[in-house]
Image 1 (spheres, rainbow, N blue to C red):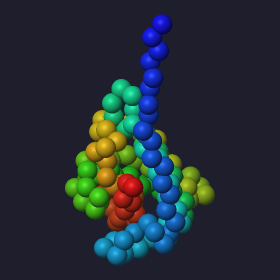
Image 2: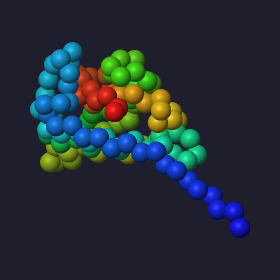
Image 3: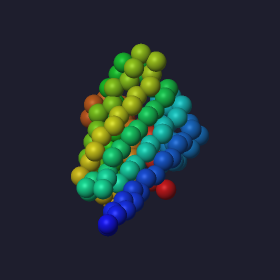
Length: 122
């Protein structure tokens, strides 16, 4: 009997407010922490889970993902809506494989708003 072995690649990283933005991205809002989990899907693509605390309650944000590590020229976007406690969570599947995702940003508004966080994928 043949057995099939499935290996999943997954990255989980978390940043607090002091690590979220580099010097090239000044802090424009209070973001307490951001947690991102990226998991390679066995049938191609990547599952993304992002959770951010310290956002404005009941507001819309956008999570962009990039092929570069500097949060420039996004290749896709996922919408994020915060709860009354200011926590935003998004789960989504993208077509790009994990190896192609080099950074994730969190921006105010449902589209290209003020960048609140730029996180490089380790």
